[in-house]
Image (cartoon, rainbow, N blue to C red; front, top):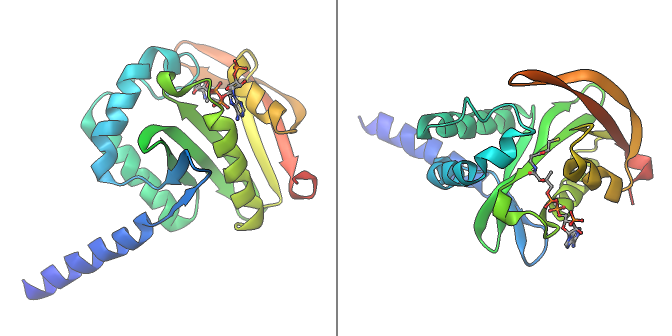
Length: 198
Ligand SMILES: CC(C)(COP(=O)(O)OP(=O)(O)OC[C@H]1O[C@@H](n2cnc3c(N)ncnc32)[C@H](O)[C@@H]1OP(=O)(O)O)[C@@H](O)C(=O)NCCC(=O)NCCS
C-alpha cells in the first residue's frame, strides 16, 4: 500500500510538473496543457458554441459528455508525453476560451500541423491570431520545426483569415479533404517555412 501510495504520488507529481507547461502569449492570453480539472469548463465551452463549431469541425457529435471531454484531455496528455502533438487550452483573462496547437508533429520531416477553435463569445478579439503566432514561434524556435501547415475549409473565411494575416502561402487545394458529418469539404493548404517566419 505504501509503495502504491508513493507510486501514485510520483505520477501526480510528474503530472503537476508537466502541467507547468504553460506560457503567456501576452498580458491577456496564456496557453496551457489542460488536465482533468478543466473537463467541466471545456464541456461547457463546447456546449455554448456547439452550433458554431459544428459547421467546421468534425468531432462535435462525438463530444457530448464529461467522459468524452476527459478522454480528449487524456489524449492530449498522451500526445504530449509521446511528443506526437501539442494541444493547449487558450485562457483569455483566465477563462478557457478555446484550443490551439499542433494536431500532428512529423518529426522525420520537421513539420507541424496546426489546428484551432474558439468559443463563440471569444471570437473577434484577435485571440486566435495571437495564439497561433505564439505556437508558430514555439514550433520554429523551441521544437526546431522547418515547416508549419494549416488546412482550412475553402469556405471557412474566418479560419483562412488567420494564416493569411500571418503571411502563410497558399500551396494548393486538397479536394474533398475532410468529411463533415454528411458532406466532404475542399481544404486550402497553407504553409510557412522557418526561413520565412520573422
Ligand atoms: C477560426 C476561428 C478560431 C477564428 O476566430 P476569430 O475570432 O475570427 O480569429 P481571431 O481571434 O484571430 O480574431 C480575428 C478578428 O478579431 C479582430 N482583431 C481584433 N484585435 C486583433 C488583433 N490584435 N489581431 C488580430 N485580429 C484582431 C480582427 O479584425 C478579426 O475580426 P474580423 O473577423 O471582424 O476581421 C473561429 O472562427 C472558430 O473557432 N471557428 C470554428 C472552428 C474552426 O473553424 N476552426 C478552424 C478549423 S481549420
